[in-house]
Image 1 (spheres, rainbow, N blue to C red):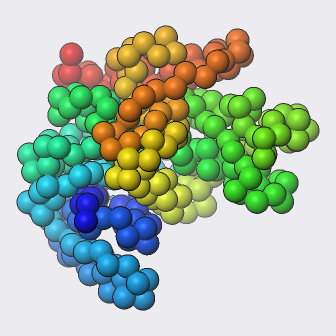
Image 2 (tube, rainbow, N blue to C red):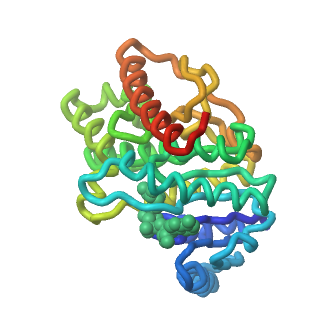
Length: 311
Ligand code: APR
């Protein structure tokens, strides 16, 4: 059985573990700094496995030794948002936490692929790459699967059509400047732009961009079910070497005219992580939106570099 370690056993970490246990694709390790929490959640989840009929081990720990030999390390440790906060407001606190989680786990799992969930997502993925020195294909950030799922959910609510028929693609940074690609999104092959009136589609785009904030305002903390499900899908794609195309935060090396930054783009996910970045053909408007989103991500990357004295 493959092994997946989840660092941060809070809401998103635990939700990820629940979705993964249901897929029966890996033994799971939960790590958190709070004593008793990873152990308690791991035991509770393991006690659910007879009911689920899934044979996976679930272990909780306050140390990193238990993560040894992981195929995948998922990092969710850090602060979630409170109402009124942007994801970027979390930078100072979360940079230190994610940096430590990345370097400590790498000592025990030098072959692991890293999936990052902690916000500000693109910048936390960038930092993981820099502090670990890993090749870029082994560090990927989860954001686009979630943002696209939100858009798909909103389209389903509006149309009453099955979520399975609805394909949406959201590119760009995981912030309010993200770029829902209405031209590339469709319902059973019918372009969304043909299916929905322009004002309805514009409202869905806006709600998608603010989808995270909508949950924060309701819950007073960040979302966890859908982010956890998104990570689980990415983990499965990697472990099963599926060559699944998903939008995800990847290290840019010239694609879309961007370099040395993490950004949400369509990637092919397989056993080695990011196998390839796909380049959509974009029109002028989409290109401009993408540039605006990239500028916002770059700004947070720069703040991180100042904070962590990265070159
Ligand atoms: N090492 C391990 N775990 C840590 C550390 C650390 N250095 N610092 C904090 N944690 C743990 C906390 O103890 C907590 O259990 O990270 C967990 C975070 O859980 P929550 O507070 O429930 O936050 P969550 O909703 O899971 O969000 C975590 O993911 O989606 C993003 O924006 C979200 O950045 C946030 C992160």
